[in-house]
Length: 239
View 1 (cartoon, rainbow, N blue to C red):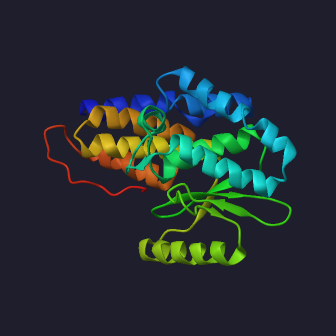
View 2: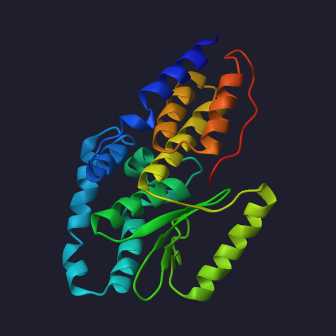
View 3: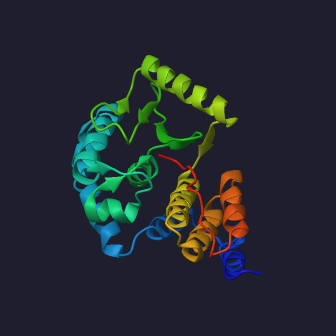
């Protein structure tokens, strides 16, 4: 058995779902911190969110969410790069649909909004549930990524459904921890594509802990099937 396979098995055992914390708040904190090198990055983000609390108290939900979307984007989401991690977002402003959505999801949890992440074949966005209808956070659209009209949201969903049909994929409504799993999946894909197979195996083990989905299992199997001395083709992942 190759060294990659052994490491992957160890990771899957160590990060099994049964090892999760009983506290949802603690689990969300721990899962977020699994993405960053320095706890000060999370604390800095929370200080930023705290600075928005007065605005939250003085405005209605829809207006505040618009303010939150563009404020976060302007300060943290500087330039798009596929497979960018949350760690990179804090360090240099690189982001993609997953890492951007993770930041927004953390902010939504901080302010107590009900939401879900919509996972499609090639994309992730956030739907925030309000009494007067959902709004959508499109992290990869800095100019008009805050969607409020039912027509805009329907058009987006139709476009996504066409992409899903071509891939035989059904939309999934997922939560914060599953979103964290997708971020670790993206990291694993990036490591795999650059030939760092042992690190990719570790990352996919963490991804499986947070989100034991079919696509994460498939990635684990792909890593298992390769030997470290073989040249690997690039695999496709989330944008």
